[in-house]
Length: 253
Image (cartoon, rainbow, N blue to C red; front, side, top):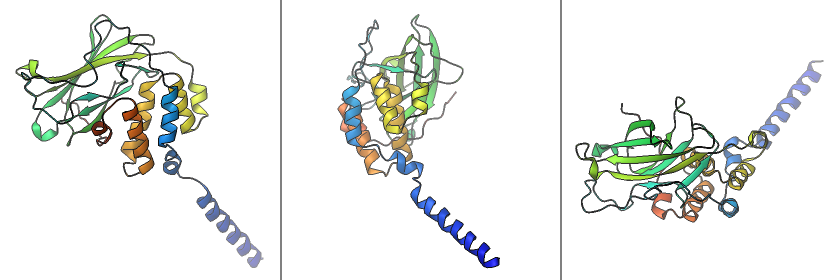
């Protein structure tokens, strides 16, 4: 009886060990992202035309001699399509920016979200990252984007709060759309998720999915290559694509 019990126990342990080797950890499953997949995703992506009046200044800050912010090799840059309009399903989306300044410089970043009536619906200052890099700003729970509405956002680095005319600034548009994709997203793979976002021109969902992978697994070469492919093929610079994706930044008031 004891011998039989021991045999059953050993068999169970062998089966458990085999299953542990056969199962794929989530991190490895996520590494299925590749430059080839990104090319497929971007081939499907067709960003909407920006029909908003007063179209923004562009996704990259172009400095002038009067500006008070010191020049940088890579300027303040918004991670947006070249139309400067990005779509999202989310009432509280995450936006991404390359910040060329760092916390030792003692500057602050200001983010403002503006509705169609030119009302500030969200305004917040943030500290700078510890080093130049890509940061995220999420629209908070107390502010919800309305489906069908477009909003203008403005991000500024305030190098001299006493003279805001010298801010490094970029601005653009975000629109929340109403699509019934929950069922499809709940039952698909990461590849299927990215393709679904692309087919529906959901820039912010695509970008945030890839940015979080890049931030969480910075040493994964496939994710790094896919991330760079996504940004450079979308018209963003190699220096932005190579910048670290940082956990940043704290609200300052």
